[in-house]
Image 1 (cartoon, one colour):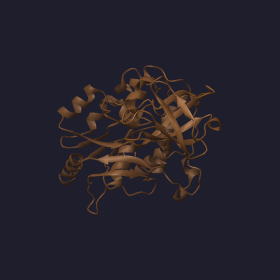
Image 2 (tube, one colour):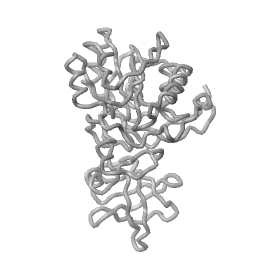
Image 3 (cartoon, rainbow, N blue to C red):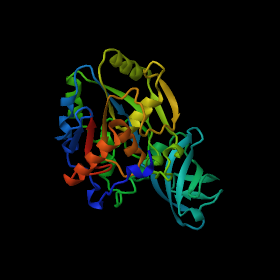
Image 4 (cartoon, one colour):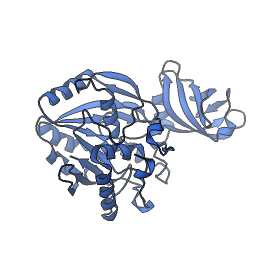
Amino acid sequence: MKLSDFKYNLPKSAIAKYPVSQRDKAKLMVLDRETQEITSKKFSDIADYMEKGDVLVVNETRVFQARLYGKKEKTNAKIEVFLLRELNAEESIWDVIVDPARKVRIGNKIYFNDKLWCEVIDNTTSRGRTVRFNQPNNVFKAVEKIGLTPLPPYIKREPEPADKENYQTVYAKIDGSVAAPTAGLHFTPKLLSKIKNKGIITVPVILHIGLGTFRPVEVEDLTKHKMDSEYYEIPAKSSELINKAIDAKKRIFVVGTSSTRALETSVTAEGKVKPSRGWTDKFIYPYYDFKIVDKLITNFHAEESTLLMLTCAFAGTDFVMKAYKKALKDKYRFLSYGDAMLIV
């Protein structure tokens, strides 16, 4: 497969700037891989495709307020600091991106308020820096009050107070993502309760989504693309429930590409899931052989993105691109705040 195989024309008007007012009222396009049929539903209908004993895997990562604005010591120059990932909690050392980068050098201190500041201790990339904050073990809590929601760059507007809740799944628990696992944004407590009452088991995993999610693929030969590493966890109880369902010939419904990558990173030789944690740079593209995922819930993704490539690997590139063409014609809403897709 080549990068150009995943190119399509996405009009700006199709990119959702805001979510629908009720999360589960988003459109749901259902792709049947066996019959090659495409059906339009509402997301609230998704429970109809699940049966007692099936498993629903969700990513419990929580988006933190990763975009900060501060002032450089002495000059008071305004600096944007985008937090990427925590490297050392005890010493509060983080990887960040700074803008404008030319003004930020090793040794500089950036002040965000009278309680929070950081010092630049290393350069990583042209805009990347490693910094040390002055609040050990407390950065997530500190930035929650003063930071802004890290909306994706294709949502061409400033974050608003409502985004703090809207750009977060209702089951988010563990701080660590700078982008939402967007397929999960469509679930409501009521819908999750309906799913539970039907006898479907919801199982959590963690994959903290980094900026690499939006990093463009710059090589035509996909075998030469390298994914950014992202932290993931498969709890022992989760792997036990998934493996029990596999043994019972039940289906594994997976919410989002992030959960998919976490699961497919943790496969045993027997085709089961093992409890694990660490960093994954797993890149899934056609023709990948999925070991765990039976049904995939996802959003409509940007052209030539790794997210689209994973979706094509699961449903077939021709089928997915046909569905995208239909979605554009039928006025589906694309990207993070957009509509959803279920591949069965």
